[in-house]
Image 1 (cartoon, rainbow, N blue to C red):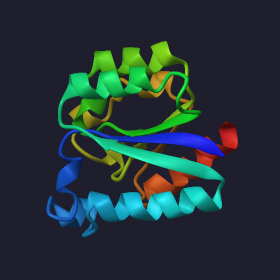
Image 2 (image 1 turned 180 degrees about the vertical axis):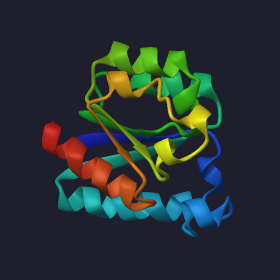
Image 3 (image 1 turned 30 degrees about the vertical axis):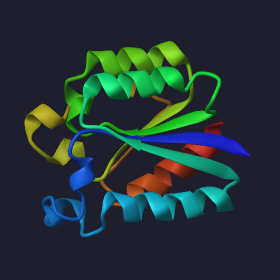
Image 4 (image 1 turned 120 degrees about the vertical axis):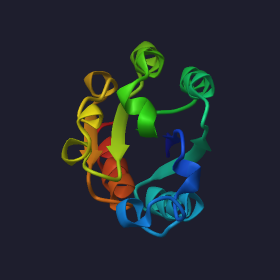
Length: 143
């Protein structure tokens, strides 16, 4: 069975309460539970992690070496600002898929650039909570 690490970044713990018109009404826990079920269907065990702290996300990525076959990451706002998360993804050399619930290219201009995309195998954006499932399917297929 594949081992996949799902990392959620800053403010994603507020899903279900935060701007439901953009992010929907499901909590992060609900999205994670559904993804764990989908993972089992795809032959993957999913471990989940969320932090609002950039350095903790970097440490979690580094700890994935030898423990995970792939990483699924929704870095939230860190997508557009974090060189250190980008460097951690590049350093661990674990297939990683970047996901976004909204279409970052249809939002504010500062969100159009992802610092992470260049070191990820793929990017899924704009499908709401389904971005998680689509990202997982893509990740499992490339592993």
